[in-house]
Structures are given as C-alpha cells and as structure tokens.
Image 1 (tube, rainbow, N blue to C red):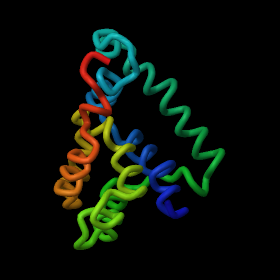
Image 2: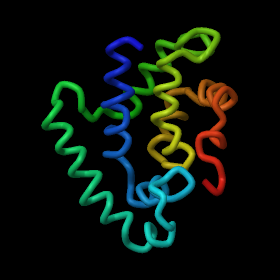
Image 3: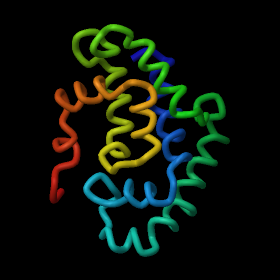
Image 4: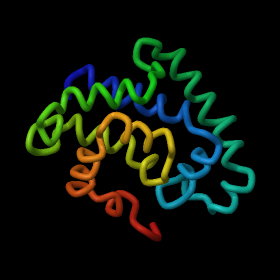
Length: 150
C-alpha cells in the first residue's frame, strides 16, 4: 500500500468515522456481532455512551495530539470521493481484483457498515461506492468477518 493510502486507511478513515457517529450508531457499532463483545443490553442501556465519551473520544483526542500529521478528521465524503476517483472505470482500486487499498478501506468501514451506521452508509451512497462495496462483499463477505454467534 502506498504511504498516502496507509495514512488514510490506518489513521484518517477510522477517526473520521468514529468522530461523526451519532449516539444510536455508536451503540450499534459497539454491539454484536461486530462490536465490543459485551452484552448488547448493557451497551444499549448505559455503557455505550460511557465507552464512547470516556474511552473512544479521549483516545481520538490523544491520537490527534500524538500524531497530528496523520490523525486528521476529514468529511467522509472527501475520503470516499478520493477512493471513487482513483477506482475510475476499474472494478477496484487495485484493478480487476481487490488490492491492498480496497481491502484496507473495506476492512476499516466494514464494522460500521455492517452495524448500519448512517454516516458510513451515506458516504457509500453519496460517493457512488455501492457497486465497489458489493464487489468487495462478494470477495470478502461481511458474514465471514462477523459470523453470527461469534
């Protein structure tokens, strides 16, 4: 993976997603099967907000201070549009098969998409990435990443 996409997929995309989650989507992301492994009722009743406010947000603040050149929050559509533009007429960023950029981008957004988070679903729709996402899901099914009962 080139350095630019490594920074996007490892630092900018995750923080840009988590910083723009609404409270409902925070809870959905933390809940099973893609979530944190705690009982869903506990996350929904009270622990989800506490985890987000006292663990996730402070981690994001610390990360931005520690690595200010890498941890930057961008509008999700900016990152999605960049991917879409670089895919161009190909099926994937990597060409006819998923490459490292495709796998990293997909792997980062997968738990949020699988959980139904509105910010990620909107980025996919507004950046015309649905076909790419469908092709990625064919290559790497969400059910394999987040098996029921796991």
